[in-house]
Length: 480
Ligand code: NAI
Image 1 (cartoon, protein in one colour):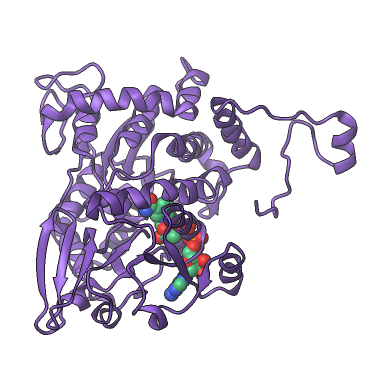
Image 2 (cartoon, rainbow, N blue to C red):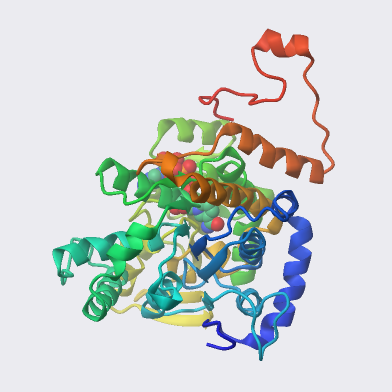
């Protein structure tokens, strides 16, 4: 804690570099800057205490400072152990006007390369406001903050944290340990916190899946807005963002020539579509695996071979998972890959690739090449190269999506925060999406920034196709 601001970042001396990159990013984030202008002097988030768990990058810094510009108080942590950009974290802690001696920014708890216990410590710090207050808004990416509040309250009610559940992962054990300690220290903390939260806005496919599961079970403790399924989020960030940042991660991690290689993309949803295009753009021969015949057919029509992973391991040079599912690449798969095959995941959690199983192969050796790049040498002396220990490689090995595409996603986040904070009593404990007209507004701002000019409907045309000239331009069932 310094100057009344508590924070935990790697190196405050990186703040100047961070501030310079934030300044450049602001120009590339016209949606967020337009929201700052639109709400200047209005402060729609005055009184909001936003606890945010989302990759602490330069782009996220512009999001955080947009929330504070709109009146919010904010605390922040990263939603992944490898995704923080330390210069961005330092700049956010110091703030635009502060100095290293007198920080005047936002309490941020994040550094690149956290251990799992550190990760959950940061998440708890981000949720724990001074004076025993809690947040009244959550902004989540992947659902870990939401999970902590929900499980905290559940175990508090039960009076005990179980020693084990059906999830036996190392991550889950660390999570249970943290809750045990926190329950021993303060028995009412999570219940009080949950009761004070007006709602959560969730960034990604995997977090949204968790929210719908909670709502279906009747366990969701507060209203939620599914930001991911705004069209200007998932059809842009998940796709065009990945198209940029997937090869960025592979290049920075390995610098291997992608052209001519056989690359496998597991999953052909929004992220998979961007991933396949990214690799094909470099001249890779791309093979797609899918479980859904519709997405599989899309891949085939887009010109990709569709195969099962088992059948093509002897050909694959690069294998990327994008499914949001678990156990997609198994230890058995990895033991049968080509020498120096590159394996990476770009889905939200690391359970897509069974790294724990890989480590258990008798006689296997791990050779660290550099941070977030490991060579695993099998007893046969063949090896595979694993990026970011199976965690999302675009943020672990590179810097994630670029600013312009994140401006779309984060504009939706800000709009969702304002909506739930100011109108929470109109929402039930369900998962909602933003109205299409707001989606169209976000698209319009970014189109103009790219120099695009929209054609205006005539009144006659509008009547003919049965829509309002001011939008929305598509029915809700339209899929884009
Ligand atoms: P999606 O639901 O559109 O696509 C996932 C696809 O994987 C689906 O088509 C599904 O049929 C397929 N799939 C499921 N199990 C499979 C299996 N065993 N084998 C092959 N295919 C399988 O989801 P979306 O939006 O593409 O997101 C995927 C993941 O990426 C999520 O975890 C999401 O949170 C994450 N994400 C990561 C980003 C990043 O920057 N790294 C950005 C955006 C999303």
